[in-house]
Length: 241
Image (cartoon, rainbow, N blue to C red; front, side, top):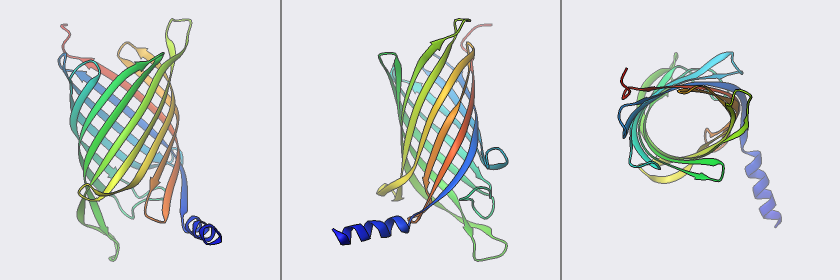
């Protein structure tokens, strides 16, 4: 027992948690192309030191197909630009290109709308040569990652204008692979607790708290408390003007 306690204490003492706080500003566009197909794009700026510095930008277009009212499949591309800001920043700017496929399922449970999303990512990430000054992008690496998100949304209360304040809880866990789809390991966990309001029939704003927990390496983790602000604006090109 004493040996077990010493081993656990040693493991805890060797793990460093880097703390940060930031803001994720997101703009989402959904374009209905037909009764089955729609285009979706997510643009996001991630900032650290609350709003002071840019940590990253991402651009994420995808094409999606509704198999039925409950199941959607899709595929897309994501471009991610890293900036040298934040507690776990890279030494210079670098980029990542991702190709992804997903299947999403929705259902209702009482007053809640429940959403599940399973996503597989193929990532090509710039590698920085830190042995030279100044540091330079020397090559890249290819890795895979699996993501699972569980989300619950409901109307919390009704306003005098007959619109609702909505609530949403979401949690996504991401698993990285060392080689192909072997040696799975924890990568990160993203939690969100948001309040929403429908601005227009095709536009909604969400705001609230998030926590981003990321495994940088075997000895370092990043814990980032986040303010989320998300605006969606949708289009329906099937409607006749």
